[in-house]
Image (tube, rainbow, N blue to C red; front, side, top):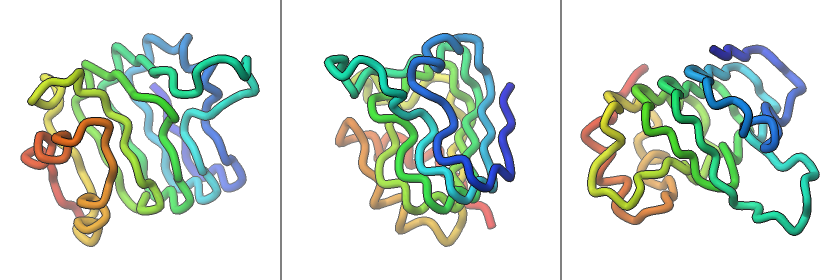
Length: 147
């Protein structure tokens, strides 16, 4: 499990090269890190490497991002989290793209139960960019609005 909160000056949570070793990570809860710009970022690895490599977190069940007012990116590539159960995106309205991988399927990951956003963030949710054009429609029934 990973709970990160109130890290006022942290701009990046994890370098890409470290994430590839976190295959057993089940929960990532990041909140109140007001300078955080990216969750998984470049770390000066080989410049010839593909900057859009996928991030695979096979045991990840919870992704909770709250009060990250400067968050621009979760990762540059695509997140493959086939075991994900719950996603919370609260007050992360600078974020423009959510990199969840649906494997070209017309359905959400099979374990995903809900996606939580704030009630005032409905317009932001509608404006999010996705890797697959139908992702927004597939995930819409799982959306839960919170205060």
